[in-house]
Length: 210
Length: 210
DNA sequence: CTGGTAATCTAATCATGATTAGATTATTTT
DNA sequence: AAAATAATCTAATCATGATTAGATTACCAG
Image 1 (tube, each protein chain N blue to C red):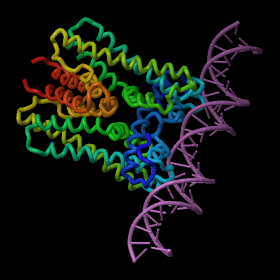
Image 2: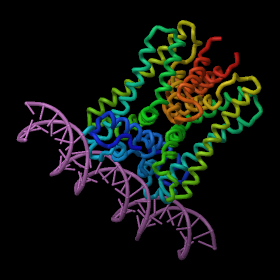
Image 3: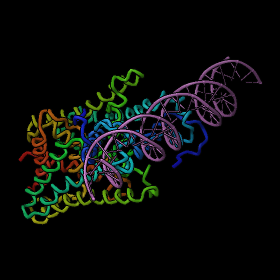
Image 4: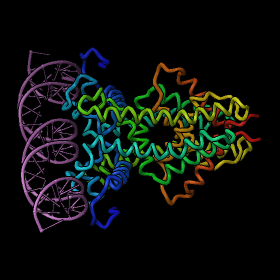
């Protein structure tokens, strides 16, 4: 499990990676600070030098994840290629993103719930900063979804795609993608690229006019 | 939140429903025995009269959920209608199942991870009975997935569907479905039936020969 | 080198939440 | 209605895990 020789000091990057990994394996509540610390050969207490608390750490993981994905998807979405080409590329980017970094991917998918869950969240007076970042994160999520909607809407308008119920179609698409983060295991019959391909086929077929 | 007048004594059914509900809201780890108990106006301690422990309770929720869904899907899958008709019905049953009982649906989707998660599970010596039921549950899950695969395979063989990569297609389909349990909220623009319809359209289109 | 900051550590604290023990009360059965 | 059983309760226990306090150690600027 240990990834490093346990020598030099650790930076936030390392911790985020390790956290994403543990998070994927165990889920938010079941992941202890100690688990994360162990992954980078630190003690739990040391993590507090880098992050205010567990929530802040989780949030940082998710932020990194979504920014990464957005940085891949956004340029495609706003490019001027044909809608079908764009959609295929976006699907490809998203799915391979999830399969390449399973950790962040699955953490992202699942932990959103912890994040949105009202348990800790009801106008969480305790840490206004975290509350704010939480809000920002959700906004990015929405942004992400919107990119897909826009591309599909475009495609419909210029007649490349048949007229589907865009919001539902996008939820369907993203649900399928997200689930990949759950079942995908490296070394299976297909690699991320191949999976992405097949999924893109499915959804582009579904949008085909005829 | 309280569903009952808090009078007569409570039975397992009630507890399972309540648990599913809380589970959906908070997730496994974040759901306390007290939360569940409160939902049926009991104390946490009282729950132990009905279930050996928290794991057993969760498992019972999931078992009930999957049996219910299977009881809906299986008859359709083994019937002798045309594959496309069967698939549409199965999608419909699954999706509306998830939207009707959001609680069980989402709990099912998410909590599988807790269940499969190795945290509590590594040949869990502590409670062999629970370990066994856990195994059985996973088997039912697989059975469920297999029903979809079979129907699609059939359809391909008799030329109703185009030749897709069946395992991936089914993961795609089920991922999309499962996600419904996450985003669906009663009272939205569309009800369960309408959502199911649109999703069925999407996937049947994707399978269309042409 | 030498002070100062950064990164860690060890050893508490503190809170939460599962589980158990030992009554108590309600319902059935005979 | 007495005995037995079921369903609850209250009041511990016990363990875990987040967070804090107070050193210690490592590393960098002057």
